[in-house]
Structure formats: C-alpha cells, structure tokens
Length: 96
Image (spheres, rainbow, N blue to C red):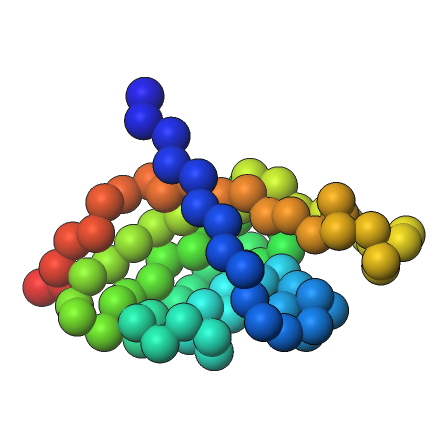
C-alpha cells in the first residue's frame, strides 16, 4: 500500500490557518483548484468517518474520508493538537 504524506509551511498565524484546515468541508474557501465540496450522507463535517466528495475546477472528482480530528484543544498554543488525517478513497477522475 502506498502512503503519501504532505507538509507545508504557511506564512500566517497558526490559529487562522487551523480555522480553515479544521473545516473538513471548507476546501473551496481556501484551495483555488476546488470548485465545490459536500459531505456525503448529510453527516457533520467534523465527524470522524465522514466522506467529503469534491469537484476540481479541471473536472476531476475526489473522495476523502476523515480519519482523525481533535475534538477539543485544551491548550491552543500546543501545535500537537493541530493535526488532521484523511485518506483518499478514489483517484482523481473526470466528471461526466
């Protein structure tokens, strides 16, 4: 099984970035390549196990499942609590 890990450094306050990243269904607001996104089966976007289904502006479609998301941050200055894990359940494909 292939595993891919990504990491980025963003020149912005961590609280502001985390506010965007933590919203599992919020990709269209901060990723220009994403046209729209929805959580399947009407589940909340912060429920572990939910699946986001999103369309790319180039016509591709992806599905990702939320695997981990902190429920509460007791210490907002502790970056170890700012982590999200998801898995892609499909490779990009064109919408028909």
